[in-house]
Image 1 (tube, rainbow, N blue to C red):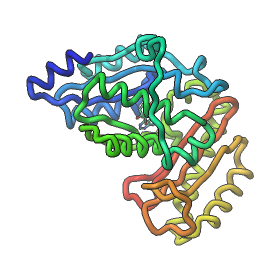
Image 2: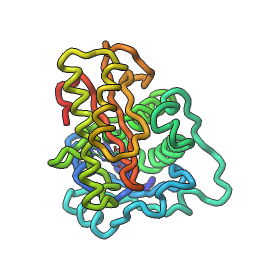
Image 3: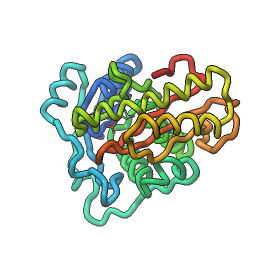
Length: 277
Ligand code: AMP
C-alpha cells in the first residue's frame, strides 16, 4: 500500500482516502463521490477495528458484507480497496496509542471509554500507510470528525480533512451499517431519533435559544413518543463540544440511543443552511 501511494505521489497525482468499517451504504458512497471531485486516485479501506469496541460492544455482530462492498467499490471506480487483517494492523507486542483530551471527553467519549483513542490510533496508522493528500469523513460521526481534524492539526499531518454531509434514508433515519441489525419494528421505533432532532430545529427556528428549554421540550417528546433507551441528547458548541446555555455560535444537537440492542447516533447542526432532517 505504501509503495503504491509513494509511486502515485512521485507521479504528482493526489490520493483521496475514505476509511470505513465496511457494510457500505449510500453514506459511504457519498464520501467516495466527494473524493473523486478532489483527488486523482481513490483508496477506500475496510477494517473493523477491534480496538475501538468496548468489551461488551458489538464487534462480533458488526455487519460484514465484503463481497457486496467489493462490487460497489468497483462500480464507484475506486482505485484501491485496502483490506488489512487485525494481525497485520496490530502485530504482537503493539504498544503505541494516541492519547486524546478535551474533544473526546463528552458524549460518546464518556459512554465508550477508549473508543476515540482506538479510532484516532487506527486512523493515524491508516494515514501513514495510505499517505493521502485528502481524507474524507462523514458528519454522521460528528465527534469523530472533530477529533480527527484536531489530531491532523495538532500533529502537523500534511493531510486535508474534508467533512462530508450526513446522508439520510427517505424516512429520515441516518444511514448506518448498524441499521442492518434493526428488525422492521425496531426501525420504525428508531425514527423518533431524527424526529427529535427535527423538533429541536423547529423550536430553535421559532426563536427558542435556551438550551435547557430546548432539551426538556425534546426529551418530553421522546419520552412520550419513543420506546428508546436514550443515552444522551445534548446541545453543544459545534467546535469545542463544550456545554452552552444559550445558542449563539454554531451548535450541534447530538443524540445516542439504543433501539433494542442496536446503538444508534445522529446529530444536526443548528443554524447551518444545508443541515436538516
Ligand atoms: P463507518 O464505516 O461507520 O466507520 O463509517 C466510515 C465513514 O463513513 C465515516 O467517516 C462516517 O462518518 C461515514 N458515514 C457513515 N454513515 C454516514 C452517513 N449516513 N452519512 C455520511 N457519512 C457517513
